[in-house]
Image (cartoon, rainbow over all chains, first blue to last red; front, side, top):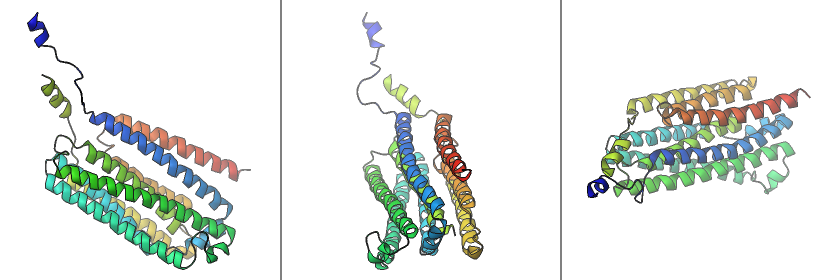
Length: 210
Length: 104
C-alpha cells in the first residue's frame, strides 16, 4: 500500500511557473496595444485623406534630423534588449544587466530628444490651445493635434517600458531572473520591441511623407 | 520526482539567438531607415515618398523586428499565426475602407 503512495506526487503543489503561458499572455496584451494604436492610425489616415495639402505643409515643421536620430536610438535599443536575453540565456548575468542598462539609457536619450522637440513646438505656439495653433488652418491644427497625441502616447509607453526594464535590472541583480528563469526579460523585450514598432510607423507618417 | 519533471520541461530545446544575428538585424533595420529618409529628404520637391512607399518600408522593418528580435522565427508557430490573423484583419479593414472611399 505504502509503495503505491510513495510513487505518487501531487501534480499541482502550489506556485507553478509556466513560461509559455506568460509569453502568450504578453502577446495577447501586445495585440490590444496594436489595435489601440491601429485605431489612432486610422484616424490619422482619414484626416490626411480629407486634408492632404494641410498635412503636407504642417509636416515640414517637424525636424527630420531629430526624428531620424530618435529612430536610430530606438532601433539600437531594440538590439541591446534582444542581446540581453541572449546573455541571460547563456548565464552571463553581468552582460545581461549591462545591456539592459544600455537600453534604459537609450530610452532616456529618446525622451530627452522628444522633450526638446516638443519644447520647440510649444515655444512656437503650436501646442493645442496656444495662439499660433488656434489661428492655423483647420487641417494643420489637426496634424499637430494628432502629432502631440500620438507621439505623447508613444512617449508614455517609452516611460512605462523604461520602468519595466528597471524592474528587470533589479530582479536580475537579486538573482530572481537567471539562466533558468528569464521570462521577465523576454516579456520586457517583447514590450520594448512593440514600442519600437509603433515608432517605426509614427516616424515616416509624421516626419517623412512630403 | 517533480523536480526532474520541471527541469525536463524547462530545457525543452530553447533556441538562443546569437549576438551576431541581432547585430545583423540592426544593420538591416538601419539600412531600411536610411533608404526611407534618403527618399524623403533628397526627393522632397518631387514629393517622392508616397504614403504607400513609406508604409511598405515601415512594414518590412516591422516584420524584421518581429521575426528576429521578437523571436517569431524560432518560437512556436501559433504566435506567427496569431500575429498574421491580427495583421490581416487590420490591413484588410483599412485598405478596403480606403478603396471604398476613393471609388465613391
